[in-house]
Image 1 (tube, rainbow, N blue to C red):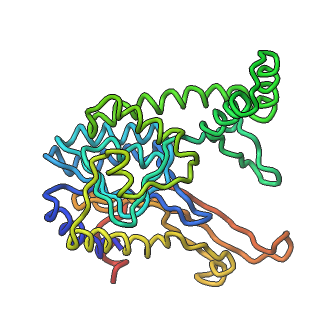
Image 2 (tube, rainbow, N blue to C red):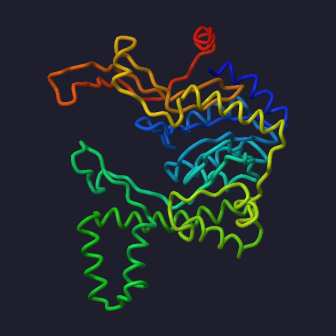
Image 3 (cartoon, rainbow, N blue to C red):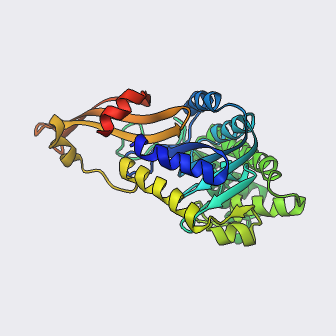
Length: 334
């Protein structure tokens, strides 16, 4: 609960001489949450209460999300501080890595990882997932580029007509407008990364090397970059926490992980067996000492219904951000 963490937030602020803002998007299987534009107003609410200060540290856990939202978050944070710092207890991948390279410094624990920033697009025009209702496959920007490079460089296809046929085959699987957006996204991510890296790296040639690695040379979107590689090979401004600082960072993460059940699969029959099937699942957090706690909640009811395939019916009622008033938090923490 938030009250369990509030003292830890205060302690971390004292240790770093900073103001702390916490942003968590859950990667719990079945209840994943991603960085999205709907958090911008929440960030503004917290930052207005924090005010303009010398330093803001963003405590970040995420598997990624919308690149434009990440860019907005970085620019917004910089309007309220002279120095922007990111604290990574565990994962800050994809759009989370983009936010991190936009900071002046990054505190990484021994478990912390960054990742490639090649975006995946998921629109209504994406290829449909067979057997799933209104669900589509995400299209990776670098996967599309890799397909074309494979045809040209590995298979040695140079003929214009043959390359045109390859594009036609690709467009039969992926809508041409999605392919167009893929190309724009690839150009955009490189442009944004170049601007952001200037906060940590002064060498233009080094910036281009970092961007090349984060966008394609790492080989896979699942590739993880640990603290040592981020510092020694990429040249990012990485700070290794001392033992006391690490204990505080890790204690915050453990409390959040317990509350959000990070990494723990949900058992739908187990949900149906308690609280008359009613469920309230927190899938994300934005917290600060000044602004309190905002949580992204999924609410609904699970019913056993032998008249439908699988015998389980999920009456999902709502998804969205909700602010926890202090008196509500106190009551829940008793």
